[in-house]
Image 1 (cartoon, rainbow, N blue to C red):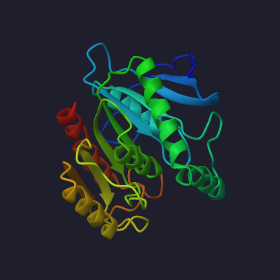
Image 2: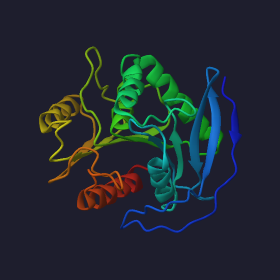
Image 3: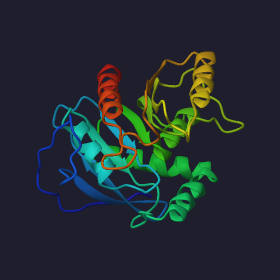
Length: 253
C-alpha cells in the first residue's frame, strides 16, 4: 500500500542550463510516501499543463539530494513532469563511503527489492499527476537500476531508458527482451569504474536483441562526470551529454 503527503513547496528560482548552479533552491515539492509500509521521500516537479511526458530519476549512491532535484527542475523547465525516486528510505542519505556501499549493495544483492522500490516510485510519480509515458533514467548506481528495470520488463508505459555513467554489466541469468524500449547510454571515455569493454559488451547484447539504442562516449570524462561541483565534473561532457539526452527525450516522448 502506498500513501503520500506533499511537503511545503519551495520558492521559485531561476537557473541556467549552460553552467552548473551551486546556490540551488528547488522549485518542486518533496513527497513523503510509503512502499510496503516503509517510509521514503521523493521529489516531484511538474512540467506544466501541457507536459510532453514524464521522467523518473533514480539517484546515485549517496541517495536523493539536491543534485537530482536540480536535474529534475532542469527537465521540468523543458516541459516534462519529473519524479526523483528514493530507493534508500527517508532520512537515509549516506555520506561515508562505507555507508554508500552498504546502501547500494543491499539493493544489488536483492534485485527484487530494487525493482519493487523503483516501481513504487513510478506509481507515486503517476499518483502525483505525472504523465503516463515515462523515460526512466539514473546516475551511476541509478543508471544500473534503470537498466535493471529495462531487463525486467515489469514497468508499464515506458518510452525509453537512460543511464548516465552507470554500471552496464548484465547479471547472470538476466537478458534484454527484444521488445525492450530504446536505451541511451552516456559514458565517460576516461571512466575507470565502468570500462569501455563494458560499453562494447552491452552494445553487443542490445544488437543481438535488436533493441534500439544510442551510446555517447565523451572523451576525457571520468566516472560521475555530470555531478556539479564534484572533482569528477567535466563541463564539456556534461553539456554535450545533456543536449543529447534532451534531444532523446524529445524524440521518445
